Length: 306
Ligand SMILES: [Zn+2]
Image (cartoon, rainbow, N blue to C red; front, side, top):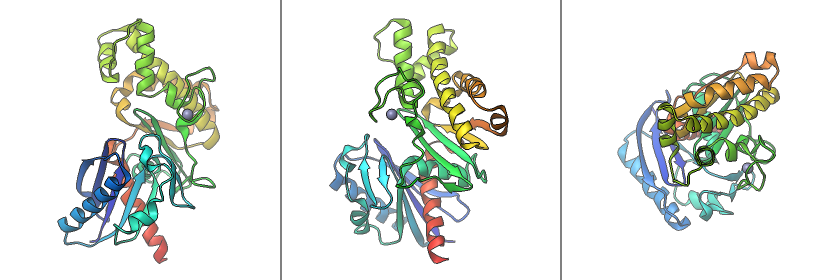
């Protein structure tokens, strides 16, 4: 049975692995993300050689999930806020010097959504939204079983829909995006403001305090849930999804923000559309990206052969 490789490039780690035809991981590992482009290409080459050596079975295709705005037509990363070395880099020709099988590049959040669609909590769900709540908010959308790319490949940036017009300035240039109101940073910011402290805390510590009865900690998570719900309500009205799956580090404390988000989404969407939609935790955790990238490569390869 042939295998498919998936790479998920993150700001701190490259996660990579091999999938069989039943979408089961047969091997996975990770490596630190280097800062420079040359080093990164070298690393991709090394990891690819390592994968090939591990397996006697043929690896037929490779999928790569890359953070940032990736132009499908130019096969170029236009902007990558977390890995600035990637900005404007012509990735496809550079990678073709390293990879000796067909490979496909796409946005990392799209790949994570595709992973949940093929092998996770969204398996077989033709209309779904996948969100990753962490340092930022990543998202991918499937419509009628197809990844939504938009006209140039930049669609599904739900992290940058405005949920608070008076909110904080976002990296994208706007104000009050979902990412500035409902991710790790905003939870810490809300808590520090409410508690009147300057301490540098993690969202996990704030969650721990919330569970011990700290009202400000509960409010900080509740506020993130409120803004998340505003975003979800709009998405439900716009896309009428069957499922919204939410993953990422913040969802380890999902019980502190999800009920508020669901309540708000219910209040801000058409009842009929809300009642068709189930809002749940995603199931593949940190593997969603590499699984999705490998599944995507397999799908693209089979389309080419058709
Ligand atoms: Zn933004």
